[in-house]
Image (cartoon, rainbow, N blue to C red; front, side):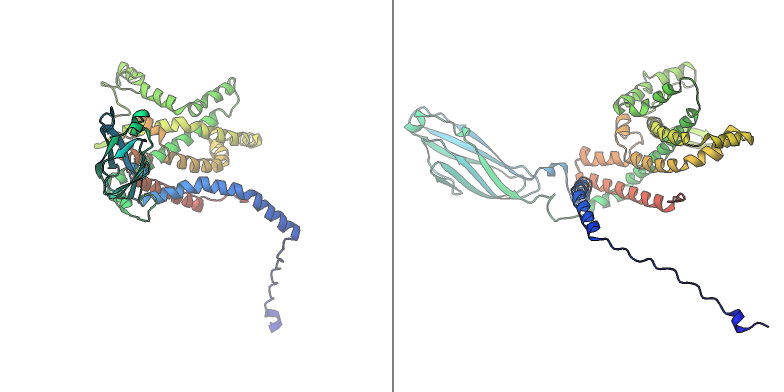
Length: 440
């Protein structure tokens, strides 16, 4: 028979509470000193990184065009008509005034000029006043596109004939104030509305993801294959490793021009070889043809030729970076693991699948993140190869075309903001769902 004492639950021992350690006076001084010494570095980094980012966000909600980068200012030029040959002659000074802006009003326009000695005005415009030789004209506000000619008649005296100085030799000064769209507090969401309402944006977004995913995957696969190939010892391995780095270290303008020449539909080497072998009847425009149609199992399909060629270039150019990191990780794997697997009868493919691949999975994960971000932001490769034509237009090319080709900086900045949020979302999902290694 059991008793109450036998069934009593033994109370669990409370977890020991770790006492909070407090920094001593010397440690606090050292911490303050460290933060003080690092503060300039943090400030510089934040300025370099955050200022362009915040400026891009600011411009994305502004109706800013390329011409708005120059603040609206009044323009004035001076011309002199007539000859001063004798005392009493009359010459005309004409000021040509203009508002350069087509959409902004310029307020409080003031023109200042210095007249040469010996020239007396016949009559002054009611907006002008003369103090000694200093001419000042208060011209009020100018509407967008405003233009005017202000004339001033001057009588020649003996003092001017003794020292003739052209009125144009003096410094003409004109000032005014206008609202700058870049610094105003006027905001709009029209840039983003136009982006998401345009059907081409979703096509460009799809092309960007296709280019990024397949280009990144291709670079990783080629790098993994090259690392596995050059991980074994053979004669001339060092020279071959150096040659494998050529696509990455060569200037992008050089390798892009080489690909364009090799794949040219009229004089390209590849098209000449394909025609000689009878593979094709007419040349293939690899960078200029959007798609080629073919049938597979009775279905008509369109293969994106230009986009696939650009993806192939991306994978070829950037696989050496993956190759270097993967090869370094493979060489750190102990040889005993491969020897034990070989004794157990594992084939080379099984050794790669069960030993090499799990060991390099961590570096592959990091490379995928880096290459995805870099490829998503890639601009120069596509711009040099196709200019964004034939279905190869990505978001970065769209930023350039909207911001500079169409002179709409606000729309270009809005697309750049979309790129930023896409990459931030991808990075967050990547770190959220990527399995952590043990010990981290």
